[in-house]
Image 1 (cartoon, rainbow, N blue to C red):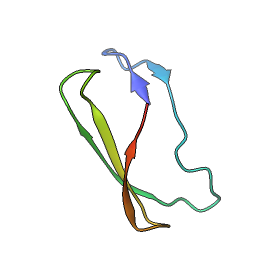
Image 2 (cartoon, rainbow, N blue to C red):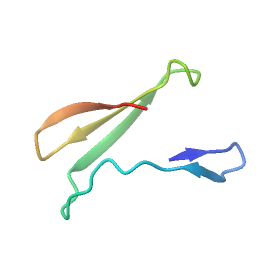
Image 3 (cartoon, rainbow, N blue to C red):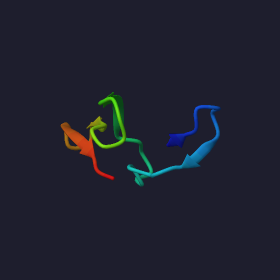
Length: 53
């Protein structure tokens, strides 16, 4: 989900389309749009994933 500073939703991206949710935990790193990375755990595969733009 992308938000404005005022809290308005600009965009969303679905990363888990299964009937049973397998996403656990979310970590954001970086200080600007160009170096921000989002990481999440996929409990179905027991792996750490990086969300790509």
